[in-house]
Structure formats: structure tokens, C-alpha cells
Image 1 (cartoon, rainbow, N blue to C red):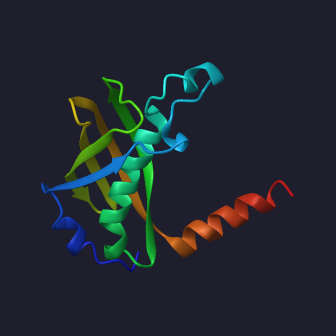
Image 2 (image 1 turned 180 degrees about the horizontal axis):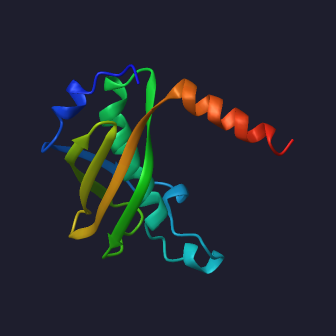
Length: 140
């Protein structure tokens, strides 16, 4: 891997803040039509925003690479209604080679709504494309 991880290693132990608003239906819990009527932030949408925050943090440091989620767990502890603002406090727990562990605390305008822990791996964009193409040809 022709990637200098020195800049990423400097992130270790640091916290970063992100926010978003639950402002359209793409954020809403919708596994069943009746759940849409609750107008609540979906756990899947929350995870996506947490992952997006980590991507925004890493992307400028890894121009020829991409960070992919390798594992994740979330404790979604309180509902958040549509229209609320959500705040993510993202901490880089460790950087070991091309592996990075994150911890996120998430709040809405009233209370803490979630905690998440996840790991990402930095991989070459070209290698990812190559592996994907190789796999795709196996079913064609």
C-alpha cells in the first residue's frame, strides 16, 4: 500500500463534531409503511450519517484510497422526530496500520440518542475496483 498513514495516525484520540437535520423522508424509519407515520429517524439513516462523518474526516488524507466499514455496532437509545437537528461527536480510538476504530456519541436537541462503535479499513480505490470486477465476472 503506497499510502502514508502518518497524517491519519495524528487523528488518534481526537474528537470531531458533525451535525445534520432530520429534514426529509429519506431519514425516516420505513421498514413497514405504518412505521413512516411515526416520522422518526431510522437507525440505518443514523448509521449512514455517522459513517459519512468518518468518510469526510478521512477523505482528504487518502486521495487514492477509500475507507470501508468492516464492522459496526450501535446502541440506538432514544427516538428523534423529523425536524430535529442531530449532533455527532466522533472520536478516533486507534489507528493500526490501515485499520481505524471510531466511537460516536450522538445527541439530538433534547438528549443523547445513540452510541456507535465501528472499524474502517483503508483500501486502494483501484484494488477495490479490480476485486469487484473480478467477482462480477464470476457470475456472468
